[in-house]
Structures are given as structure tokens and as C-alpha cells.
Amino acid sequence: TLSDRLGAILTNLRGKGRLSPQDIDATCREIRVALLEADVSLPVVRAFVARIKERATGAEVSAALNPAQQVVKIVNEELIGILGGETRRLQFAKNPPTVIMLAGLQGSGKTTLAGKLALWLRKQGHAPLLVACDLQRPNAVTQLQVVGEQAGVPVYAPEPGNGVGDPVTVARGGVQFGQVKQHDIVIVDTAGRLGVDAEMMAQAVAIREAVVPDEVLFVIDAMIGQSAIETAEAFRDGVGFTGVVLTKLDGDARGGAALSVRHVTGAPIMFASTGEKLTEFDTFHPDRMANRILGMGDILSMIELAEQHFEAEQAEEMAAKLVGNDFTLDDFLQQMQMIRKMGPIGGLLGMLPGAGQMKEALAGVDDRDIDRTAAIILSMTPQERRDPKIINASRRQRIAKGSGSTVAQVNSLVDRFFEARKMMSSMAGRFGLGGGRPSNR
Ligand code: GDP
Ligand code: MG
Image (cartoon, rainbow, N blue to C red; front, side):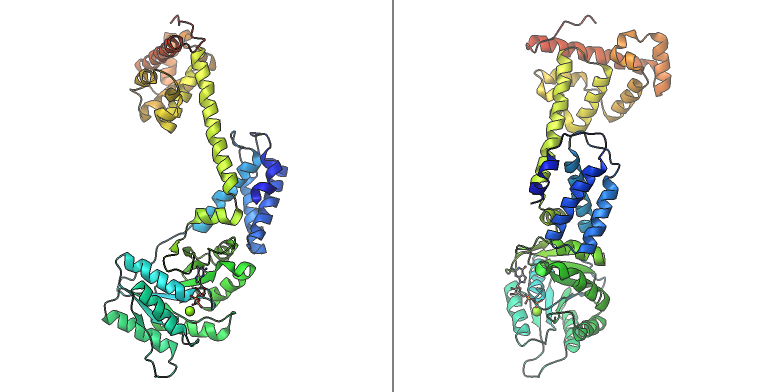
């Protein structure tokens, strides 16, 4: 997996200031291999990796992560963004029925999908109708009828015994039938060929022009691998489509087809099919797909752990300071910001005995207050922040002016700080946390 390949780089020391070109190159090389192994087409891999490089170059290094982890994090975000950038729901027609046409190669899973989609929509309270326009294969109509029965949805098909009908006529008839019978959705199943074929495209275009679908869903087998890009291009240019459905994701394909198709056509991937049963079907989840393509599960949990661990370390550092009575206004501010970010439980306070009291000391503090407090503290000199007792009356006026607040607000902040520090210190002494010299203020 990618984790194994990135092994050496992933154990680097963290926090080096800025990602070095070597770090980025090394990580991108491995990501490139992972993408190719996932069957993403080469031109797409190239474009994607170039984009990652650009974004990673010059990025601040997170203090919590090592460079490789950070590049992986960027890749993951970018991949999810691309796969899901424009995830959208089915487009319903203003005047029903909504017509959904399925297109794709033979065996891609169109007929199965027709049943899945019909069942899924029926469960949501719709009344879909299936229309059998694959008159190419002898059993195609029967197959759709079986699937329709399983889904509890009627199927419109050419009359038996009338010879081989014309798929365009059937499609038109199906939509009219749907209208009359008050079906709000009509799903048109079409014929495919084993490979891209001019006659198939012409037939699909003729059906599309006859029924003017609200959605044309391009159905593509995830196992198709590297050829996904050509197939997608052919259908984009031949028929055109508004959305993509990826099938056979229950197989061992890594799903690179998703990225290729998305990249080439820009059309959103809307659904994913994960088995032969009609219920094995879901809306598309970009995060799951990103994980599948890169096999980054382990790395991502490592990254999450590293970030959590880092926050805990920071909190511990702060606790040590408090107990040692080295608590400064900078710490006070940082603490307030931490509380705002994580909530009081996640912050340092939750780690100390008697936390409730301390929380009360900060209780009057709301978001606006924190911003004002930050402004006041940042208007002080570093020395004043370390040792606020040196702030005299004229400095208080200056600080008030510099921070757009009143002298009373500055006074109140300084008082609150001393109170908090005294309380921390006495609490530390009481609970034997050590270092709790009694405060002389
Ligand atoms: P069509 O030619 O595009 O209509 O494709 P079909 O719906 O007839 O599907 C072709 C074959 O793929 C059938 O044997 C289906 O049972 C199977 N199939 C369709 N979707 C899936 C899927 O998501 N997973 C698996 N494992 N098989 C599928
Ligand atoms: Mg079929």
C-alpha cells in the first residue's frame, strides 16, 4: 500500500518550517505510483500530481505533521474535492415525468442500475416507470422485466410477437405511457455494445433526441481500468451525459476510473453500484472513493492521531506553566482561544482538578470578549504580557487606545488575569500539583 511505500518518509521528524522540494518530490513519486496502480489514466495522473506539487510547494509545514504526512493530507483533500466538487442530486423536471436515460457499454451494468435506481426512487415515494429500449440482445427485455418485478416497478416494453421493434419508438411510447399513467419518473434503459461503436452511439443519440431526457447517466464499470478515459470521451462526444454512475465497486478495482472520468468529462459522479443485488447501491461518497484510490486509510488515521497528540501536548505544556505560576497574558490569551476552539472540556481546564472554578473565572467571556481581549493583549509589549504588574496608568490608557477599548476594560482584563492566576496557583497547591508558590499578587 501507499503507507508501506511511504514508510521511510513518513517517519521523518515533524515540523521543518517549510516543505522541501525533495520531500514533495519523494512523496509525489509514491502517490503517482499509487494512482497508476489504481488504474487512473496516465495523463490524469500527470495533471493531478502537478497540481498537488503546486499546492504543496511553499505550503507552511504543520507543526503536528511530518512533510510526507502533510503532502498526503493535501492529496486527500484535493482528491475529495475533485471527486465531489460538484456532487449534486438528480435533476427533476418541472413538468413530470422526469426522464432519466442510461447509456454505457454492454455489460457495464445499465439494466441492473435501472432496477436499483427504480427501487431507490420508489422507496423515496416516487412512482417510477422502466422503459426497455435495449432490443439488441434477445433477453434484454426479459432481464429488465425481472429487475422491474424485483423492484416493484412496472416496465414498458414492446408488445411481444410484433417482431423486433424500434428502440426510438419504444422510448417515445414509454414516456407517453408514463405521462398518462402519472409516473413522475421514467427510466430509459438502452442497448450497449462491447466496445465503442458508431451504430450504438447513433441509436443512443436518436433516443435522446426523441425523449429529451432531464438526465443522461453514463454507466461505467469500475473494473474497466485504463480504458475508462477513452470510453468516457467517446460517450461524452457521442451522446453527451449529465452524470456518471460507477458500477462493480464491490470488485477489487481500486476505482481509478472515477478520477479519470471525472477529470476528462467534468461530469459529477452521482451514484455507486456495489453488487448484483438491487439494494447494493448508494449515492457516491467522494471521501470513500479517495481512500480507495490511494489506499490511504492507515496514513490518514496516523495523521489524525498525530494532530490530536500534538494538541494534547500543547495543553500539557500549558498545564505545566500554570502550575509553575509562569502563566503569562500570552498564555491567558492562548488558553481562551483554545477554549473557544475546543470547548472547555477539550481545553486545558478539563485536565485540572477544580476545573469548574477556573471555568467560572473565564465565564463572563464570550466570543466578542475574546476578540477584544486579544486586541488588548496584543497592544501590550511582550514584557508587559509576561509581567502585567508593570503596566501603569498611562500605559493602560495607551493600551486602551491602541486596542480600541476603554481603560475600564483594560483594568478588568488585568484583574481577571491575576484572579485566574491566583486561583490556578492555589488550586495547584491544594491538589499537590507541585510548583504552586503562593502568589504575592
Ligand atoms: P448492461 O449490459 O449495461 O445492461 O449490464 P447488466 O445490468 O446486464 O450487468 C451486466 C452484469 O454485471 C450482470 O451480470 C450484472 O449482474 C452484473 N453487475 C451489474 N452491476 C454490478 C455491480 O455493481 N457489481 C457486480 N458485482 N456485478 C454487477
Ligand atoms: Mg442491459
